[in-house]
Length: 113
Length: 112
Image (cartoon, rainbow over all chains, first blue to last red; front, side):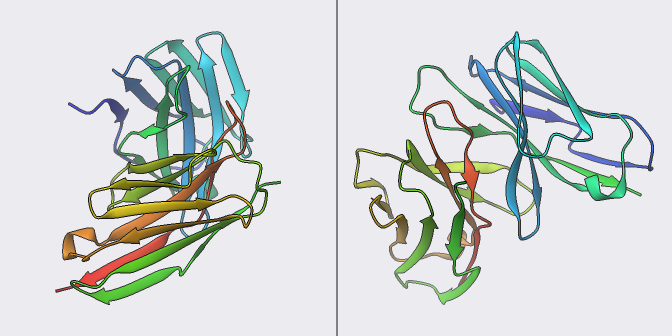
């Protein structure tokens, strides 16, 4: 089983719908992150959390919200999806203290029509 | 603001060739630099992590170097194989606890 698991792996939805992407990890890491990947733009950070009571905005947090339900779970929500949120979304974890190495899930491909 | 650039954007080489992928960053004050591999439709797999105090890291046929003063890192792949075909991403951590800043990646194709 993967150390970082994302669900769903693929989702097609319509404009205006609420979508939740879920991430769970078995690495025992405190730090969790949500990134989105767009062709030619690399990965951009949406939100990150250093522990259950800590939530921080990344560089592109508008239109997104997150919830850190437990150390092992970090979910990303799109309250009202729009077509330019069509992207590949990745969850990642890192430990503390640590080398700072990130471990990624396999991604959730979201298409907003 | 830290920016990361990867050159070339795409590379196609015959099997067996040694190759170098380049990564440059604008601010030399980094905590570490990480190279990832991404296969189509898959997540990112960490290949090598270089701390700011290190000059290089090696894993099998891969060698990554870091020159902070010039803002550059290279990923050297020896004796390339078709299975090395993937997108290679470089990411810089500006400081401990800070987020990673990613380059856009180099798409590598190794032809058999």
